[in-house]
Length: 73
Figure 1 (cartoon, rainbow, N blue to C red):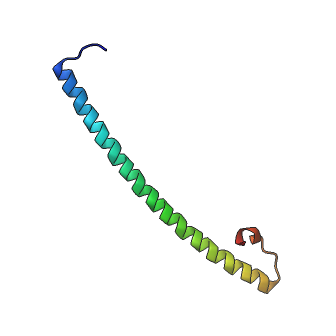
Figure 2 (cartoon, helix red, strand yellow; figure 1 turned 180 degrees about the horizontal axis):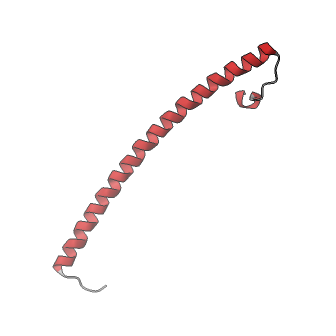
Figure 3 (cartoon, rainbow, N blue to C red; figure 1 turned 180 degrees about the vertical axis):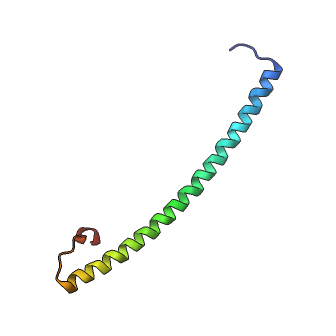
C-alpha cells in the first residue's frame, strides 16, 4: 500500500469513524422498525383469528361451507 500523508490519514480516520457511527445508527433504526412491524403483524394476526372464528360460526349457523376452514384450524 502506498504511503499517505498525515492530512490524508486524518481524512480517512475521520471518514472511518463517521461511517462506523452511521452504521450503528442505521442498525438501531432497523431494529426499531422491525419491532414496530412485528407488533403490527401480531395485532393483525389476532384480528384475523377473531374474524375467522366469527366467520366460522356464521357459516355453521347458516349452513354454509366455510371457505376459510383450513385457515381456521
